[in-house]
Figure 1 (cartoon, helix red, strand yellow):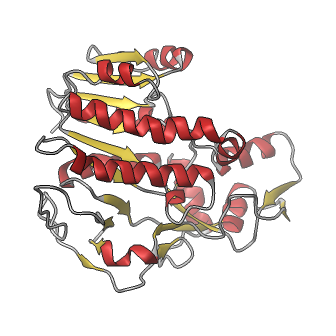
Figure 2 (cartoon, helix red, strand yellow):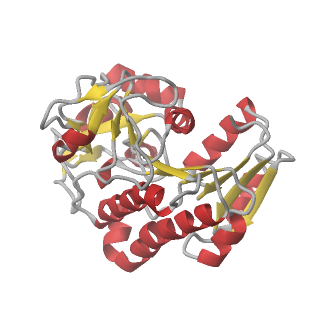
Length: 331
C-alpha cells in the first residue's frame, strides 16, 4: 500500500512518529516520508537517525492553515499525531490546547481535502471517551471533526478515520519513565494515585502496527479501538521496584479510576471484531452507505450488546507483574 506513495506524519518527531518512521522504512519503499513538526531541534536530532533519501523534514505548526496547505501538496496518506497531550498542561493552558487539538484538526482536514489526500488517520486517546479533562474533551472534538470530514468532502475521495488506544509503554511523559527516574535518584517509595486504579497498556510497536493495518481496513468514519491488556497501577509499581514502598497520593484532577475506550452510550454504534472494536459514525454521510460490519480486508464483526462498555477495569485481560516486566524489557 505504501510503496511509491507519499506519507506525511504531523507531530512526526514524537515517540509515535519516530517508531512509525522506522517501521515504514523497514517494510516499504515510499516515494516520500514527510516529518511535519514545529521543533527544529527535534527535527535535527531525528535527522541524525533517519536520513533515508525519501525523508523530508518540514517545519510547520498544525495551527497554521496556510502551511498545512503547502505541506499536504502531493501527499497520499496522512497520520495526524500532533497534539498537546499533557493533562495538567492543558488544564493550565486551555486555549493553547484548543488551538492545537481542535483548530489544528480542522486545518488538517481542510488541507487533506484540498490536496486530495487519499486517506487520513488521526490518533485519538482513551481520554476522549466520556472526557473529564480538557485534553480528553479536545480529542473528542477532534474525533468528531475527523468523522464528519467524510461528509464535508462531498463527492471527493479523501477518507478520514481515527484510532483510539491507551497508555503507551515507555513513551515520553508516561508513568514508567517517571518511576524509573525516581528510582535512579534514590527514591525510597513510589507515588500511587489509588491502589485500585487501572490503565490500558500497549507497546509503541503494537500501536504503529494497528494504525498501519487500519489504513487497509478503513472505509471512512470509523474510530478503531484495539483489544489490549490492562494493568493495575500497583502491579506496575511492583514491576518497576518490588522492594520500594508505595505511597497513596490520591487521584489527580482530571484522572479517572479506569480508562474507557468504548463508552456504554456508544454501544449501539460499536462493532466487535476478533482483535478490535469499531465505533461507527452516528451521522449519515452524503452519498455513502458503508456496511461497517465488514471492513475493506473482509473481516466481519457484530454489534455489541446494549450498554456494553470497554474499560480498563472490566477488561478480561490483565498483565501480571512478570508480564509487565517482560513488556518493558521488550520495548
